[in-house]
Length: 410
Image 1 (cartoon, one colour):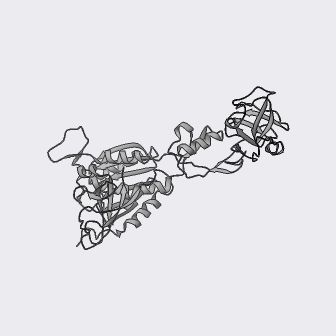
Image 2 (cartoon, helix red, strand yellow):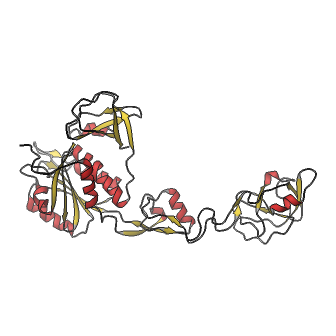
Image 3 (cartoon, rainbow, N blue to C red):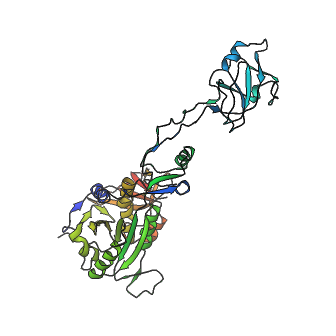
């Protein structure tokens, strides 16, 4: 009998969808943050423009505001039209109206006087510079209306939806919110997760290690992956293989009202699979057609979704990247999806029948070179990798040069 016949076999895509469904309510909480704290957060509500951008017609550069028709009506033999200089318009000052044949020195960003519909750059004026009010100014004839004018509402009109809910806040989007006068924005609250790593054979880094024990790498891996994904780690616990102790720990942590539980280990079919023993009545444990990371589990316990990952370090790392990270992206809107590429193998790779093989790989922009073997314990090889190569199921060896899909990690 196959060791996995006790649990359903699920495809990679099917399990990714199951994780998304399990986390569906994760993006419901909303909080308000200052703009300075908004970078990378996900906007929770549409931002409707309370004013237009630009708020008023203004000058695109330093020059002279005129009535364009005056430059066409008053032609000189030298191709220049004459204007009388009036009071200058610095940025931030409301100007008076502009009369026929007048030119107002105007600075970049300053409002146009009523009646003006064009700006002539100062470099085109004779004499050069900004003459005193009352002076005679000569400008090229035939100026088009709208030249170097930023029109009110040209960028965003009052009442428009300036930013759509669900978008990650980039510097440009934060700048737009600031330009619309917003000092704060509603964003989706960062999920709060409690992490469990399991096994009597595991001890915390820095603790005394027995001759049959190993240091816990999974808590560090999951903590870093969750933080990178914008999830707050509200607690991390190394739990023994005692089901009663784990159930008590879980009930205590549920009182803190986390949004998510995540575990590594204890989900397979051995005699001491503590996570599966406690959670199987509350969820499902399946085998995904993927290597590493075949055993997976999902549960709902104390009203909190629980994502159960396998316990070998590379299996934990790969499972997070294949399932939990993309589910967070879809449900919460953050983190940004991993970049994907297709590249040729630098050496032959033998696929697995019926299972997607996720190989740690080094992508140099031209070829894909696997980092170490396929084993789920080879953490040093994973540390050298900057990508995951997704090798589809198959029987025949893939020769060098075969294109494979890549998930870029950095």
